[in-house]
Length: 126
Image 1 (tube, rainbow, N blue to C red):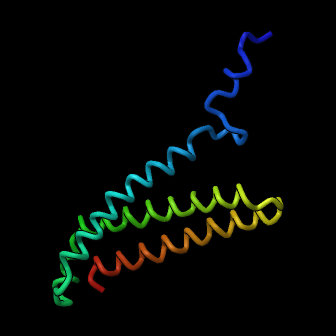
Image 2: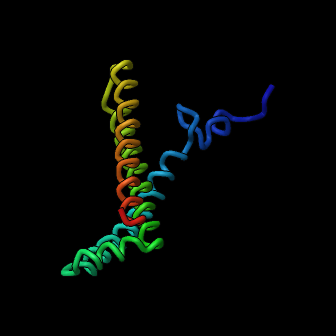
């Protein structure tokens, strides 16, 4: 016989046994996106009116490239998780839900890989 109450058994665990993990990942990526988005706006504003060589040189800076890569990764993770929540909440057919969740993951991975390739190509001076 267990001395645990039903509340103790389910505390921090949702129906999918994930608890608050999804919630916190979404919030952490949102905060990261705020700071990285501000950085991106600053970068774009600082490059307004610059010639092609200056823009290329600035984007070749490893710190700039890493910040842009962090934004791409954080943004696509946040996007995938947000769409996952919408799909889980509003798609009621189990088969359609599974297909849409898989397509959501593939789409986010495709966007992330495409953006990472573009940033690396710019940063290594293609």
